[in-house]
Length: 403
Image 1 (spheres, rainbow, N blue to C red):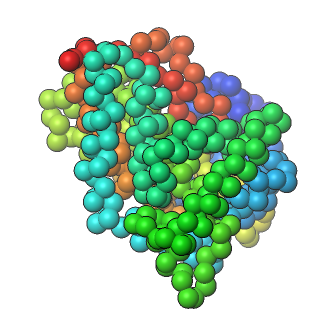
Image 2: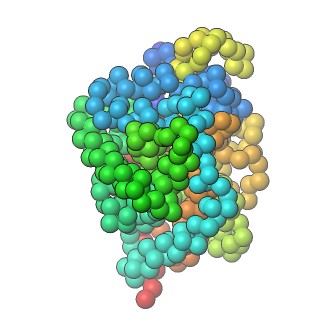
């Protein structure tokens, strides 16, 4: 395998979108800090990715401005410019301090029983059918139920949340077409109106949810604006729903392609936590994240100029041979470095524990399905058209039906 010559590595190449891992392997071994297509720098090694994702000198504000220029004026840029994911300190730290209290291990573990129950309830009618689309019938309802409950969004609104998310998601990537951007603008406008009404209600009548907690955390000091609340809520819906949905699909697909590992998990259910970590490492739903450099710097011997765009390839870091033995092998018995799927340092994902609990509940329930198989050949699976996120659009599976 060789990286495309000339313009360099390009994540929009259809071959890369189908399977980026052979390209990552070449970059890791031959050009770990690579100047690729359009002059963008791609970083692949575990330690370098951790540096780019976790340190303040690699900022997000410039990425926000670049992205806003792509989608143009409208609700998309008006809302998402306020999200925590596009902020640098001090605004990043302030928003993080508001969200953080809802993601303490004690509070998240309190949700564990509810997540397990939701997974069982979703699977109960599906067991009788003996078939399902794992993405639409199980993964997305589980992920969306979890994050919407945390935020205090009524269950009756989940279909609307899903529809808005489907239309907005393509606009978060460089591949968005004018038609997708137009749909995303309309969906974001509707989503923002919905959140404006919900936030006003929570200001009048606080509840036991994250939106109410953020409002209360700033009362009397520097009240959080409605725009900041909307941006934060939108970001959490995507981070807590879209990526978890994709990760459940990627994890189950890894087990379907490695049936002996599924047999091992069934025989030794205590390995479930390790299985979650290996799914995150082997095929992460978050493949990359971008930054802009605030000053000239040296990264592993390569000079990077101020203002340069850098893409940290977490999917490559998770297969760094310097950190993981036989990195292209799926093995739930691993006990090596934690995956880079949740970022690092100042931007480490606050919802990492929650996501792990959802994955654990999903895999634990699905592993109990006898004769679990993919219902379509591997070559017919369609992946999302995204350079940042990785997940199958649909994953039909069959299994032994039970009453």
